[in-house]
Image (cartoon, rainbow, N blue to C red; front, side):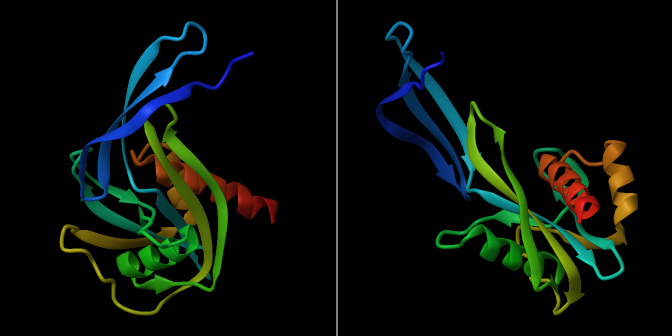
Length: 182
């Protein structure tokens, strides 16, 4: 049976900036007692939302994503600020990025992007009956647009690999399954 590895010594922050981090942690391999070094990279925990209007259209964002070096269409998403719950964060992000809001949010799943090296959890939500409530409040580092299209068209685009964002892909398929099961 596989045993849990114990941490050896404190975690050391190598770099921390803009909510992103790089950390070093040593672990003891229980099989032979050797000390192994691991480097973790990541960011604060995050949220993403499949936000649907009353007529089943999805509200998406379009923005240049530096790591992908491409303009991508994605579900509204962002980091969970200190002191926020995932639900508080997803409501704030949807409003800030799109100007839409909803009274109907449901957490439909969560995942880690890489369980060996990225200790960051992403929470997926479904919001239904979304309505425009104000103008978006975009962060100065973001150049962001809002796209609204039929949910079924977005699912087809995801199936064809039209986005590289794993949070968007996972949240979309979790939402699709949830909607079919209702």
